[in-house]
Amino acid sequence: MPTVKEYRNEKGYYIRSNIDGRYVTLQLSPEAEGLFSDLGFRGDDQVSWQFLKPLCDSGHAYTNNSGTAVETKDINTEVSFSSGKLSLEKKRRLEEFLDQHTPDESASETGQPSTNGDERTSSLDRIDASKRGFIERWSPSDDEYEATLNRIARADDIDGILKSIAHHSTEHPILVNRFRVSSQEVPTYSFDTDGIAWTVHDFRTVEKVGTDAELFIDIRPGTSHSQSITIEPETTEWHTTGEQFKREQINEFLTVAPDLLYYLHHLVSSPSVSPRDLISNPTADITSEDASRLESLEDLGAVDPNEYSRALGTILSLGNKGYGRIRGHTGHTFTFSEEESKDDNIEAGDVVTFEVKPHRGSIYAKNIGKEETGIPSSGIVRNWPEWRDRSLSWLRNNWTKRRAKRDTNEKSISISSSDEEADYQCIEVQIDSLTFYLASSVNETSDVLDEAVRTLLKQTIDGGRTPPSAPVATDEVEISLPVNLLSMIDSVVGTSSVYETRDQFFSAAIQNHFNEGDQVELTVRVPRSYHHATQQLAEEYGISTPEFMREALEDALGTELRRTQ
Image 1: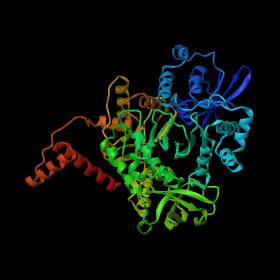
Image 2 (image 1 turned 180 degrees about the vertical axis):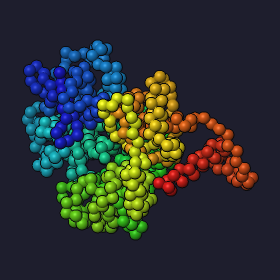
Image 3 (image 1 turned 30 degrees about the horizontal axis):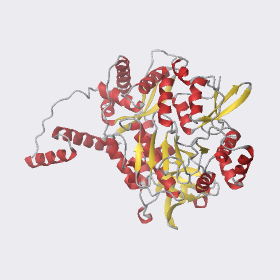
Image 4 (image 1 turned 180 degrees about the horizontal axis):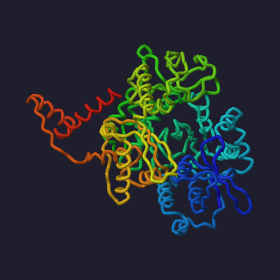
């Protein structure tokens, strides 16, 4: 059977198999890799031809020499879907994937050779040494490098593909992780932001692609949490498959968005896209809380060097010619020269402080020095919406206080097991600050969380639904719990439509424990003028006066909690 393989030093998969006595390597598109990752495939796992053949037919799995051509005529696709050889989950996800990612019939296909050997050789000669060098650098293996050259040689618009490569290889400060040419002959570039994969399909320079789009950006391509942005000459659309953007998608979008804007800003002949444009035309609903968080993108516009004081940041990448990319805690991403670093051994992932300076119409980072704050680089990349207005001194002091609380075990909780030999795992989750404050007022916080988690787990398995309320503020809590219990929680999160993340499950558990769903009446006496003002504000927000008062109270409690942390 075909076997899944992982590249040694690169993220990604390929397939090794034997067809009629000869070994075959199948390359996978970014979307197919996302599908494999979503379904839990890992290196050396076996995958059936019933699963692979539809991917080969749609161009998402292809061989070195002939694009998508794989001799699998003996496998009937229709039979494979009903043969029972695939699990129901794999059938569902594969059908969903093909529905979303199968190319239009009108689009050009490169599955079968369209040129003879002499023509192909002549086409390969048009790829000069410089571009071959970049293609090789962007390919994780020799097989994929050869497959990419073959796809370019057979493409109808070779010059368009080579022009796109030139746009990405002329010292663009954001480094391409991988490069492929899709079955529709579209150059596709893969990037990564703090472990979140995203790809760019560049339609700008190629012809006959059957779309008005200039760029198509896919975040977590091929997975059930994927989302995308289509940039056309007159409009930009933000897509997801569901009726509402999930909280996890919003979190990942905010993590990746600064790099998307940085990429667009530095791309030759890039369409003009503002931070607001990215989110101006969503095709699914967004909760009011998430919409409020997305407003932080407005701050990622032009930087005034005179108003930008020294910032905390992390090195995202180092280029091949002495230039790199740095993300500040404000969310802005800057190019920097290694000459501006005070440390000779600066590396990607280092946490630093820096200033900025204008140069030839752009803003660069300068006076870069390593910073030993204990703040992880991932925290800077992901927390910028909350940290963007904070000063460097606040970040240092706040993180020191958080570490002090951890050292005194104020935010470290252990859930015990009746099995003395049980294996434990330590995780960090963001849970509702208000209910955690209530739990902390009890002598044994660990007992409260233990009971809360096990109660909700049992209720969920029995078919009960306890949706979490959106917290005003959250606390990061370190929890040590038995591995088997964590596995059950992850199974519930993975299969339930109620909980998208561990954070939501733990918040729901502790909210449920303190009967947050039970409502009580609260009578407040205020001056009549205050009451009129409250009514007017509630009408402006489109909610009732009691709902407005409740949100105001929660916000006040959340502010007090943040002040005392």
